Amino acid sequence: TGIKIFSWIATMWGGSIEFKTPMLWAIGFIFLFTVGGVTGVVLANGGMDIALHDTYYVVAHFHYVLSLGAVFALFAGFYYWIGKMSGRQYPEWMGKLHFWITFIGVNLVFFPQHFLGLSGMPRRYPDYPDSYAGWNEVSSIGSYISGGATLFFVFIVFYTLFFGRRVEGNYWNVQPNVMTLEWTLTSPPPFHQFEIQPTVK
Image 1 (tube, rainbow, N blue to C red):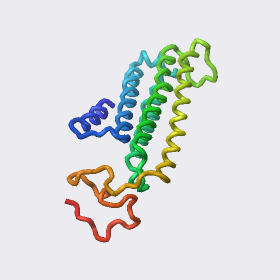
Image 2: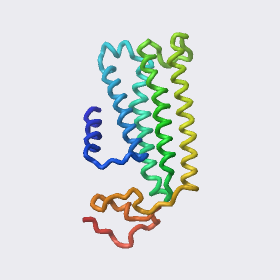
Image 3: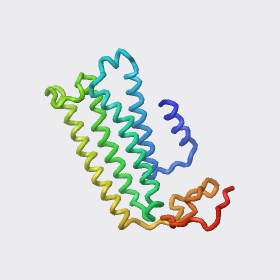
Image 4: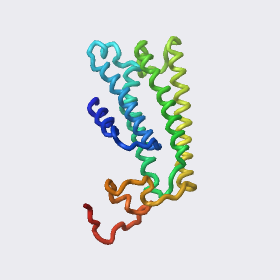
């Protein structure tokens, strides 16, 4: 996990990064994956794992690594490719707002669950003592924020498909020396792309 994280950071190092919506989602993915990885190191300790096994600490760790990491990476891909797939681009401010609402919401959902697990709250129980109510309330507030962000994303999708700004083939301004074939085509690409085999140098 650590090697992957440092590889991703090194890939960005020295690059001409623009903090557009897809990049925010990619950086958010790295942050969440890192939090999940660090909490996984705690669970790798045998003594700690005996104490924390089947508590909400495991739930928080698991969701940071798999659920949130995968979801943020998928959103990064969606916002990067929707213009090429549909020929229309989302409003940048909407994409960024969606990112920040989601980022705040999911962290409010899952970060308090670490504290619940450290306090001994078991997972897979239908009810819990009142002593756990505080962090559960914070987690519930985060789930409402995350749900609202999801509804906002559905709105963004429909708005983009019907009212989004029309884009050209190379709407991300990919430089010619690093351009791949998809950026030479219109957005969306035609059904039959090339009459002759393209030459790649």
